Image (cartoon, rainbow, N blue to C red; front, side, top):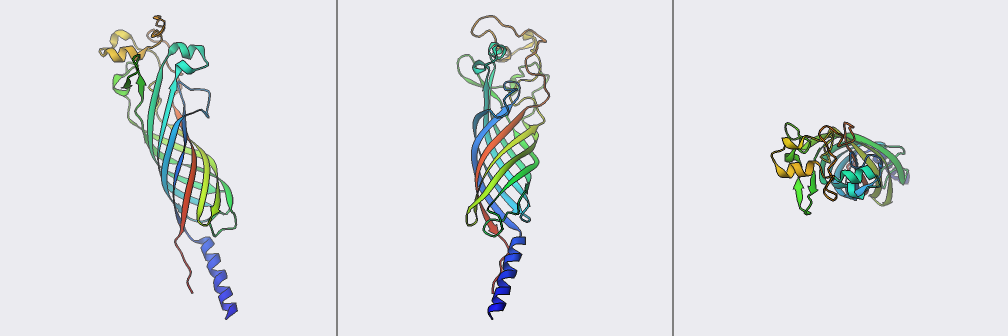
Length: 262
């Protein structure tokens, strides 16, 4: 009888290692962006982020998750170390809302409370969609939505959503039973250059009907009275895309869907 029980226990353990599992979790952390107001610091955090996810673990190495996240990003030329940026004097803040499907690959066989490893590094990549709506503070400190102002003289406003390609690296640790903690750094390649409302060149100020749009298109002279944003001169960094990132700290719980009873 003891040999039979030992065989059943071994079978259950082996089967559980191969079983598919579900996982849910939540994260908090920081958000940042790389773009026209921050072209050179890829790890500069400018706001907070939070998210929730549901994940399907197919085995100890591969999984896919549905992810929802919110992150706040911002940048201010007035706080830059670059004299040209301080002279330009633009600023923005933006709340990004992302829905994505992401695949993960664990470098070690990892199943919380069942697998042979308590931790593993991992990589991930996927696809998603993000909504964005840049705002700025005017000279009086009031927040103004920028999309409809068309501050670079666009014929029509840019979109309010963009396709994104998330990718990154992380590490996860099974600290208690089916609970895991994770830390990861994930960048998002976007298909817009207007997360910050800045992209190309200055428009002709005479083309603006809206006085707020005219004032926020060139802010270089707000303190000095000398405006340097002449029509056709460079306003952004002329790169075609902005990027943003989330630095996440996550706690997750794993449900093993297959059980063995005897």
